[in-house]
Amino acid sequence: MTVAAPYLARKVLLIDDEPFVLDVLARQLASLGLSDICKRTDGRQAWAEIENDPAPFGLVFCDLQMPDMDGIEFIRNLARIEFAGELILMSGTDERILETAERLALARSLNVLGAISKPIRLQQLQRVLGPASPEPSRVSPAAEPFPAQEVERALKNAEFINYYQPKVSFANGDLVGVETLVRWNHPSAGLVFPDRFIATAEQHGLIDELTSIVLADALQLARAWQEAGRNLHVAVNVSAASLFNLAFVDQVAEAAARAGARLGWLVLEVTESTLMLDPIATVDVLTRLRLREVGVSIDDFGTGHSSLANLRDLPFSELKIDRGFVHDADKDTTRGGIVLGCLDMAEQLGIHSVAEGIENRDDWDFLNAAGCEIAQGYYIGRPMAANLLDAWQQEWRIQWQSSN
Ligand code: C2E
Ligand code: MG
Ligand code: MG
Image (cartoon, rainbow, N blue to C red; front, top):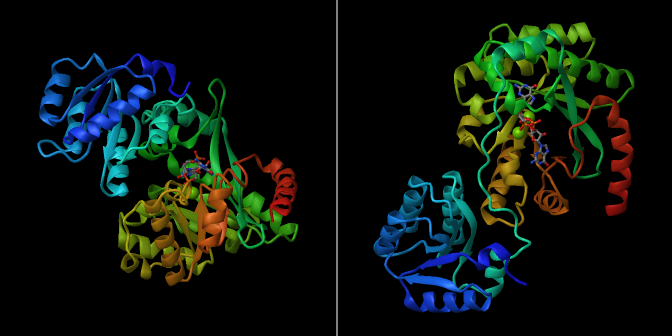
């Protein structure tokens, strides 16, 4: 069987202003076993039918360019009535427009099965309708954040622990450092990820305390490595609220002194969008950090809309390309182009480049060929407790040697 069973019974609506396209598509679908197929050349009429009674239509194919209603308007309309059926977008123009439309539909929580370019080939249809195709992608709602009182209690009970994710050199596979990622060892909910408590901590004045706990542990690791003669840096994520706190730079210096760790081995990661919040305060605090030899990394780069002109005067030491652009960069020309642009910018600024979100060998190969310096992601190693880093490193060595 070439089509997943649930689709065979669906009522299918095909919308395209070219009758020829409709005929070919209807025949292709019939050859795949779909039998209940309606064809419409008039976008407005098709929309009126759906609006009148959306329930019967389980699968809708819609062309993006129609004279009377474009696909984007159609998507907006479907979202407004919370259309529950599945949607496949089609277009005969630029693939990027098709991809953008697909993202838009996903962002509006429509069940998008796929976006296919015309002329449509049978294999494309099999791919989107096939049993092996993933569950219809729905933008999953963010996990429920924890209330502030719980975060406060957890801070008192020392329930937060640091995980560390390795960063390695593309050139020789060597470990160059780690990124600290905080986890909450919750008594009943298990291991809780930062998306469920960082924003709460930021909004309720708890983030400085959390940052200082994370920093203190990370600096212990830096000291241990220093003592072992290992030249590895430790990166810590810093929220805007902590960064722009006037006492922050001194607090970092004091924490390092308490831990006996050298500041030169610490990197602070600040998201690109944070940096653009207050450019003057940013120059101030970054300069003070760099004067003390703390590294500063621009995190999630590519999502914050800064330009070379914005960044030229800021003393960064590292640029981290957002994982949204890194993973599958080889399969998507837009992502690939953004990655190349980011690497170009790092080179022009004379700073280190890091790719986060390297999930597989293809991601690695693309970024490596593009000249990126440092890799981070599940392909290399997941975030882990500090005591697992040595075992990871041995395994990684073997993996690296066998694939190079
Ligand atoms: P980030 O700094 O951009 O961290 C990278 C995130 O990507 C981490 O998520 C990491 O687990 C995840 N990741 C790593 N490799 C891969 C991969 O190959 N594929 C995919 N899909 N994901 C990967 P995590 O740990 O959930 O952290 C999320 C965010 O929370 C971090 O994003 C950071 O902004 C924030 N965060 C984490 N720890 C702290 C902290 O101590 N303080 C503050 N203020 N923020 C923190
Ligand atoms: Mg980070
Ligand atoms: Mg990031």
